[in-house]
Length: 128
Image (tube, rainbow, N blue to C red):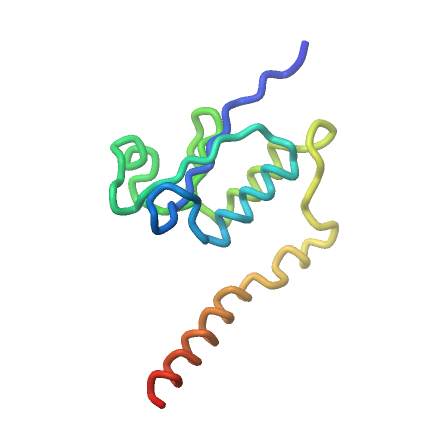
């Protein structure tokens, strides 16, 4: 008998129009993980200017993105990918984790550094 797949919903920050998917790199990464694994899932965009009661109940702290896996809510963005790798595992789903554990930490702060360098450049441009 085939295994029943639980409902998977990825809640992400909406773009400036309040409806389309925003530009959050973490949301995009989780989207890609689910898509590459071949999981059927729904993406729910959350307009941060208009929090719904449902979203407030699921994620009281208001942190986006978060994942609803069946009835389990996962709000720690650092742990969601690890959870997906553990639950959505071979043989049904491909393994995406690196063979070398140190590879998982490579580039963790690349977005932070990139954001800093862009901010620094913008500040210099404003002073000229």
